[in-house]
Length: 147
Image 1 (cartoon, rainbow, N blue to C red):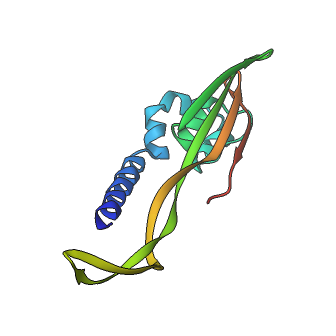
Image 2 (cartoon, rainbow, N blue to C red):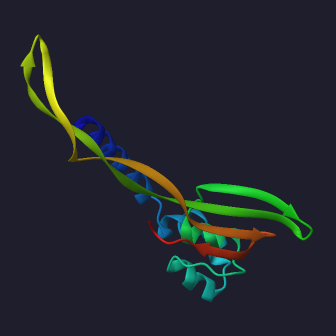
């Protein structure tokens, strides 16, 4: 039990430290030419981590970072792409406990199970936000409520 919780803590710390290295400032430096070509009002939005309909994919990347998944498609008007950003939450599940009762005939005896204090936590992914592009411009976007 303790081992699994330790593994989750280490995995969560690794995920958070990996995400912490990608910031708006670092992405602006990475795509400086694209950032400089944005209109002043778009730059102000991007600097605040916000996106608007009509922005190009570089602006969205700088504001929100790399998407978790890209879904490609095509329509009569041209290429389509949907960027999905995933979030993760941990769901706790209680489990049954067994009280140690004693030894007899070389085997431990246990009392009846009871719904105890212990929880195992499992990660669940969900779509946190999605951005739909048509011809490399934001056609629509939406964010989902946090879990």
